[in-house]
Length: 253
Ligand SMILES: Nc1nc2c(c(=O)[nH]1)N[C@H]1C(S)=C(S)[C@@H](COP(=O)(O)O)O[C@H]1N2
Ligand SMILES: [Mo]
Image (cartoon, rainbow, N blue to C red; front, top):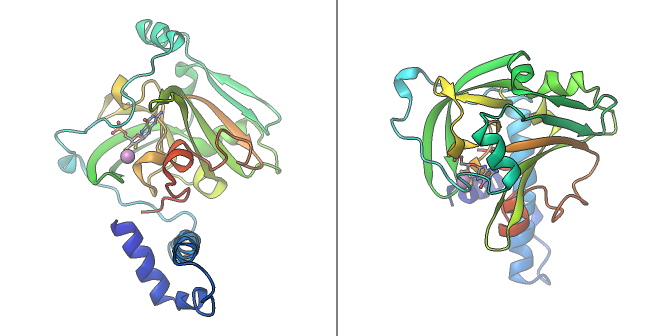
């Protein structure tokens, strides 16, 4: 709710009223949709131009860590493949990096742990209205994409996950653009609060995309795919909740 309010304020503050003047023939809901759509673009544009493409999300200290960090959405992945890997300490896990790359990768957890990494203490904000501060360590995504020699034709990075969600068991997935993909705080986390990433928080690997809302932080990541367009990926809106719940694709905080 506050996000929508903030976006409205942003629009008002930036003369965004122009977007809705002179369209009296539109239905009210068309106008609301147009405002929200332009608000999403504005949020992205304003956040990126004021803060800069690499502005960091706020970081905290160990004294700020939340005593409880709630798990939300899937707490495990039901597939037999995932459960077998889990039972075996993820020895057989391989992260695939493919799509528009010249050198597809298949990385074990040991290999991922040898990649350039970052540790950060950040606040996770879920749209459902709760937040928690946690410490995350993981491989920075940018160097991994460089290693895979991502092609110039790539515009988005898709995170495929092991779990499905909802009554119709749709695969969970998420996507980000290249600004967020190469952002220094965008990591594939394998540790949380100093220990291995727990199952309920997305073991063995979950994305942290610190400048965006909780649903962008894909858990149980199985594969990273570089694509030119999101149109043909699952429902075409760039993420599980974008497809199912009409959530904004750019979920900047
Ligand atoms: N694969 C997968 N990733 C997911 C989800 C999910 O259900 N499946 N839920 C999302 C939502 S809405 C939130 S708030 C966070 C919750 O992360 P946590 O369980 O570590 O708190 O994961 C996000 N990533
Ligand atoms: Mo969430």
